[in-house]
Image 1 (cartoon, rainbow, N blue to C red):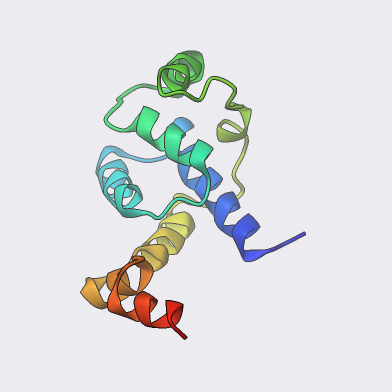
Image 2 (image 1 turned 120 degrees about the vertical axis):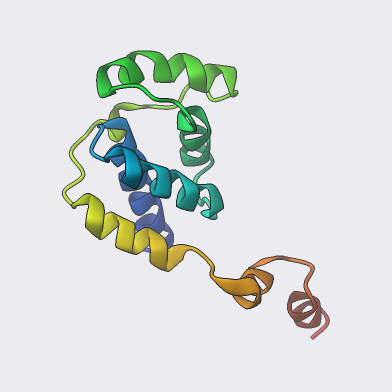
Length: 126
């Protein structure tokens, strides 16, 4: 099964794995976190992992040890973290290109994605 949802969730896992594995430098990590903060998450688990990682400056060994307790405090005690420490098979630059392409730019695209805008209301009354 290779639906667009699977692909998006696979990419989300890669984005988080690059952080967990310490594969981003400080400046790239800052941009990465800013973009992920605007990302429309498909997986609730991935969103919880991002929330647990936000602002946390630690190495991969410390992250692997402490991430489960951080996720438990966020209400996600059964999240399997092994996938975030598995090889990703792409470069940080490739993944950053994907992420930049996924982030809405400008008010027009953001309004199209938000329920309750006039475009989505019109679609509901058809």
